[in-house]
Length: 73
View 1: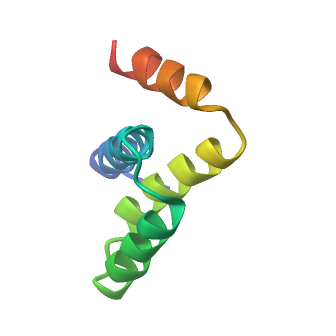
View 2: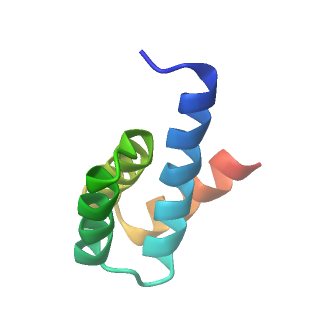
């Protein structure tokens, strides 16, 4: 399990990645970032990005924007 600090890192990267997707960053670009982060052992960051990619791939852009609004209020 993650510590509270690690959970915060995962959540931050989740939101950051959703925002990046909403601004036009491609899934492939984010998958490349994951591969780079894995090499550096940044697993919490990878987890947050993966969660965002999973959410984005199964939802519409409207849902992504709503998720961002709900999570940042």
